[in-house]
Length: 471
Image 1 (cartoon, one colour):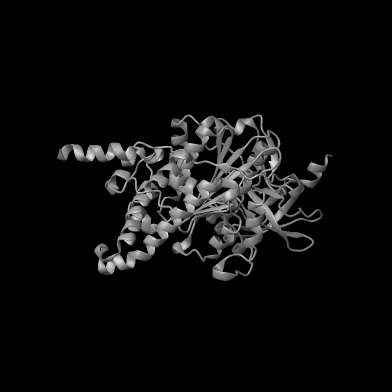
Image 2: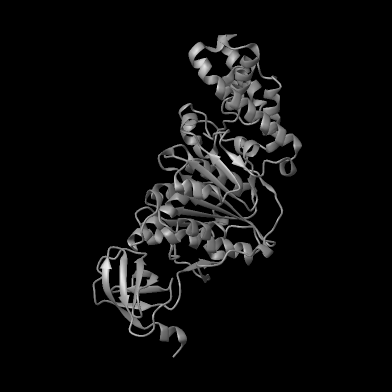
């Protein structure tokens, strides 16, 4: 008898409480993270999370537990949850178990690897800092992303996190020779379907794999789906030596699934009902995203902020892992300034003279300063009107309002809704536009000429077309 078949001795289910299943084994107790299979067709998958005593283990079901009863046999598979890795996962859409969910044939010619892996050691990590261009003006100028770094898109419900994430995928896959892996954690199936169609139309599906654990799935599956995507990304980084773009929508749902699992396992919650192990779980996930000497995993993560409260423990813990934080503001969204990135709250550790260069750094600082001064003057304008400001302050307001409009941008992914053709703007064009606005080159142009344009020179054609009918 082989070791695997010896380990695969059946236990007996002794209790089922929703997703929590207790199983009794007479002799060999399965280790933590072992996968058990139960049910009539072995279709119920249980992950062992605790050893209760010498004979009992407690696990969380990664599938619905309907039909599971006390006394049912539960077989130990002899290993942890595994993810499919290899070239055949590209252009495919899979679930947490590696089953195809895109109505195509099951995956073939793949290797299966454990989803529980250690992060790369410090010795093997790369120490180079490089900028990762997105083609989105406000991000590239004020909060540049790092190649091999982690960026978070923070915002409440409905401010445009998923739209911004989809636009970044569109821009980057076209210009990025690497692989993209999209991980949907606890989001809607509608978004997955739209993303699949958008990537298919853009012709970039052949360099992309998608893993989904939707919001209707049990908490155990939602909690593990991120680890499955990470395992796929690590294969391309470590074995194929390629750059990987890992997109996660939404990291808050990962924390939320952990909170549900923790509650089901009977752990005492900490602040605001979050699990006591939240910091460890998030660190275990985030630290695996790193660039090594052979390749890099660059990650962009949407982070839902409950009730727009940035002091929520989920947001605070996530902030500490990121090299760039892009904060989306409901106020800017309500003013029609899309992408609704808050330029004063968004930050990046790349925005230093040593990394981005002296010109870019000083320009970004001046843009921030101008927008911050405008923010301070808004109360005075609301009470007394613009006419009561000094000429110098009026100039600051004019510059800031033009900068705000210039930093909006039409997206490729929203063309069908807005009627505006999407624009990809190089960093040089974005910097030169901000510089020319700050030098008052466009002070005689109407503000609307700078709204929803790409490079700054489009403002000239816009203002001419506005004046023509009047003439």
